[in-house]
Length: 105
Image (cartoon, rainbow, N blue to C red):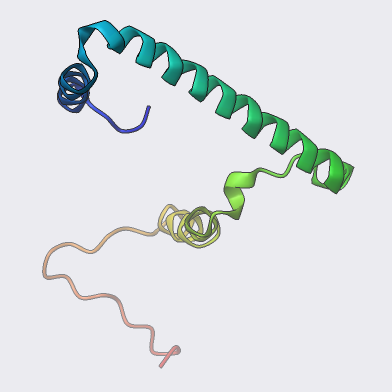
């Protein structure tokens, strides 16, 4: 979910057990779950309010597309991958020189 594997999760669980103790750990976990649920609800409410305020023309706007990294990947890198998948395009072998187009120079 957050890019945390089993070893990292185990270390976090041991640290939480040492910091909070076995008596308070269930209550802390319950409070953390409530907090995550509340934050998700707040984010969903904010998304729906933004969509309502912007109107119908922005109804299908995905807020992740506003992230600069996603924007570059979607509009620049996808075009490069599409060019590489065109028929007749193949990667060069080791030591192979690229073809030269005399009309392009």
